[in-house]
Image 1 (cartoon, rainbow, N blue to C red):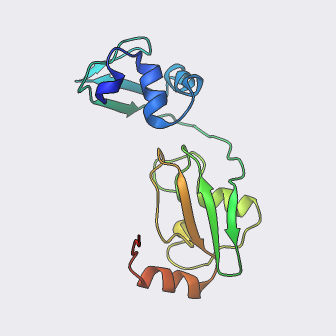
Image 2 (image 1 turned 90 degrees about the vertical axis):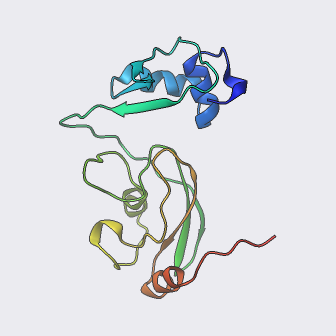
Length: 158
């Protein structure tokens, strides 16, 4: 945790660090789906942060854990690509052990046709963002776009 979080409640500090509301962090704490720990010791949402605390989130395994996905905002779409605003809590694509919402699932539910390239669960995925990260994702809708995006290195310009 950064110095600016010194003395804050864990739920408030986590909300600030993750860019989500404190009530959303509270919901995560209360869901029982994970344990928040510092130095191997479980913390409560009302515990206070110390400078240098490294928070570890331990996910609990559940037999049946399903989260409804909601449509993700489409920022741009043409015949080759779709740019979507990925929300925190969405995986890019299905994977073993993940039963939550995915970008691919949300796009398919919205009727977006995705390129049938690569493995079935990763169709159209050119890059990924972690579940805990929000941001823009480009998903290929055509084989041409998929190949072109995969073959070109990403370059940042001023």
